[in-house]
Length: 198
Length: 295
Image 1 (cartoon, rainbow over the protein chains, first blue to last red):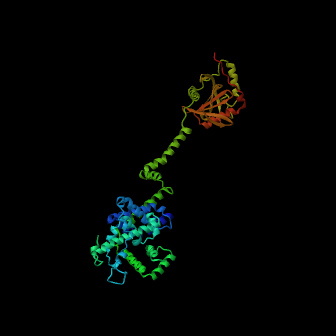
Image 2: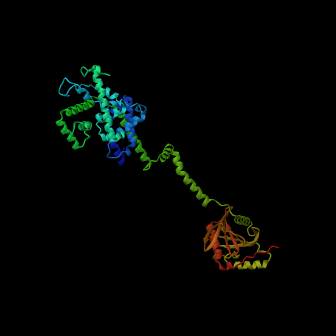
Image 3: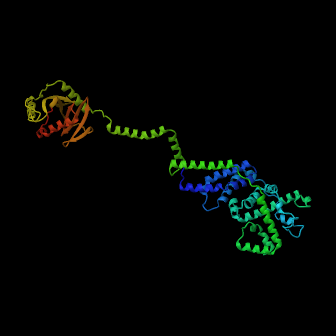
């Protein structure tokens, strides 16, 4: 089958876009939490991409564009989920895992094996902490830490100015650290602190 | 740079979102400040842990294949439509083409109907047989009558002398009654008689061409007759009008107020030939037929 010049171009873009399937699926998994929904989301994303590829501006970020489509698809499909209360005790903005760990010490010494090492966190711990984040926070951590999108790309995906991205990312990380902290205490990674759990 | 300033930009630093200048400023501060350095390192390693230890999910191969297949199919469909409709891919046009593709009979009908309609239009405009006009019918009937009672000509009343004088004049022409003597003309006069045509008195002249082809020439007072709506053909600078009835061809022409009607089984071409021959003779043109007045 022969394609026209324009068709060839879109075909090339599509082939490029297929490279991001795993990343998109990963993100969809994290947002929806189950395989079936995530697969549907990714499939819908690619069909929508095909339909709107003519609106894609050449030279702009394909990956960010795909994430934006996926995000909008997710929001449309799970609007209810997205509307869950996002404001989880915002008073802990200043929570810092590092500060807590070093609270009873003069200094944190990464070389000192006796003190807490972040490497001790297991996959489950991270998953638990991530899954407990409200969706709005979870997505931004995913974009930044997991998918490695730049602030500019994130602002493109979620349609917010970069300042908002920065502050939301900051709050998300602090909240994530809080979950990790409580998890670590529960599990006893942090010695002698078991009783601290709220 | 103070520790506070550095800490405010800790994530931007770790996410590599800072400009060159401020990045190196913080780096210098971190080299100098052990406390900040530790904190930055802690956050750096935490970030790494989150990335490394968060489970990565892989899409199943079947779903991947399904998506790739779907995209290819959608592509095929779209280029298919493009090929069918050319540049414009309006859905309406597409539907029309689909209809024809489904029922080829429609396509044939769509191709044939215009031809059929225009053919019929041409037939009715130019070739439809027009019923002969009343004058043609009468002339043909008259010829039909006379052709069966051969030789009964009287040269006509009420003024027989005048009539024979006229006839003697006629004799000087080609179709003179002098039957025995052959002459240079093909046509000869058989006889002449008083007649009625279309409710008027007329002169009936019977002519014969070689091969016993008989012609009737009616000479009528055509002052009130209009024959212009009959078929017309020009020959020898004269407008001849045609008609056909009962297998006889009828040729009509007008000369002044006199209407001549030549009738025969012969072809139209031959009729014209005879008519031309008779009209060629100048003196014949001076001959004014005698129309006896009704009592």
